[in-house]
Length: 394
Image 1 (cartoon, helix red, strand yellow):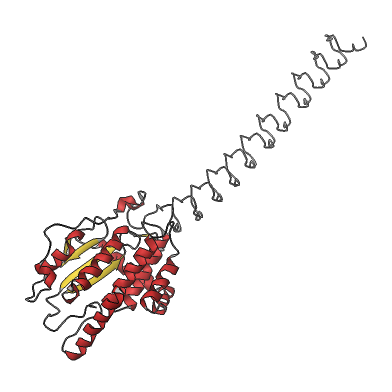
Image 2 (image 1 turned 90 degrees about the vertical axis):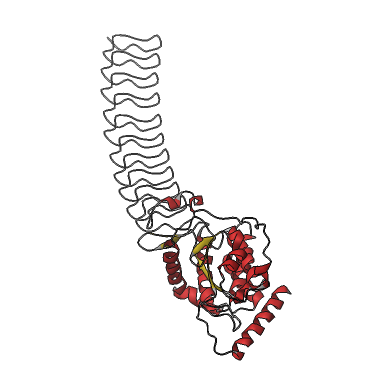
């Protein structure tokens, strides 16, 4: 009901624009203001945010209240920048977002919505709805279902957003937002980051800061009745909360666990498919040719010098695991391994090769042996007979 009332109010304001045709607005200036407020007098407010940071939902709600309940939309030029702490990674400009791929997707959807909807109430309501809808889901919601539900709830057409996203236009918009966010002076420290007339302000003082920055004669009533007590500070998201992934510079070769790994990355997350020329493989990754290290469940590649216990040993390997067949020329075999020719040590259950100088208790002695074990048949020419052994002729 509250939304319908606000929307009707917006329609009335829109009609007033036809009564005073001398007033004009740009595509970015979506607030509909009365004729006594000039465009130059309006306060420029920019919000740098990311869609899955809890503080972004807070700021969207705060903006809706400040701009429409308190009628500050008359005096504000609002700009929303959905990028936040995200980064552009690698030569293919993949997006690395603080709260994972869902946030990258929803950031782009917001970029498309900002282009598709030129009404401040429409797109702020869309942002508020999608922020709260996505954040209320545990685990992460199906973000596509969330924003389409919000379109239906608010009576907005989803087709322009779909076309923008599918064509890649949303991605281009996001790259522009990346440049704008990274070019802030002073640099942002967290999100949401609020700038009023090119000066950063604390989110808790948003209404007071707008009223203070406005230099027009006629001010909204709320500016004369600002409570002296500050609002509670909203939650914010710092860059270093991304598991250290943002410590690397732009075009970093380090990828967070939930991000898509770019080609030629030097480090792969546990669930990421390794790209060509990677030198480190995660436990579930298929080993690459020339890799110097093989994970426990990985098939060894030719030329590998180390194999895991369940790995098939490659030719020329100098170390064999317990269940591995020893290659020719190997000097060491495991207990259940077939002994190669010329081995000098035989396991208890192994047949001794010719020329061996030591015979195990259950092994048949070869010709020329001088010592016979108790259960072994003596060979011709033997000089010592064990108690249970049949003496040879002579």
